[in-house]
Length: 225
Ligand code: CA
Image 1 (cartoon, rainbow, N blue to C red):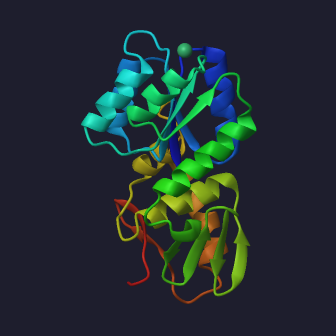
Image 2 (image 1 turned 180 degrees about the horizontal axis):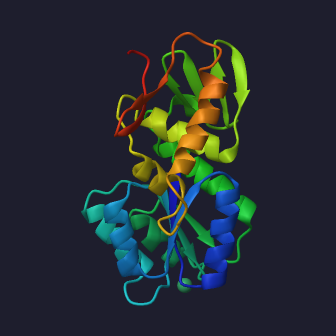
């Protein structure tokens, strides 16, 4: 799952982004409103954490622009102010939730989980299924024919991305961008390494292979050949 954090206080931005990455999210970060709109136009995020007080274009204007462009991504506003008027203004502009600084990272995580859960139409009970394979988003495990399969944070992120795009071939580059940040400079061969371990976990013991290689293009997950 991919998040965008928009916060001009660099240290806070780094702390939040590190915390969310440790929880298994892919996180992009930017520091002003104009950049935020560029990121949102170029990538489909599962949620946006948006500071109100930003240099240039403020958070409320970013939010209003997103909503006027029919971007329905859930948005959590961050603010130093905590008056009822501010809260109402934020929610009226199309925010899904609101958090006043200073906040605990645990509360932020909990709010994000709730927000994503509420917005996830196809994520019934926070599960995604492809044929015999189910991914339990809350417990971060895969289940195949009753067998519970533990996953690392990165394996989970890759498998979730594939399952969310069932039947669609994803290139290594696209997967890299989704799972890591745009500034990740490693080789896209890392995707092959993760795919190999995922296959070992979810496909090796079964005759039907769900993760398929499309030569020259990338990988796809599907329950038919
Ligand atoms: Ca700020």
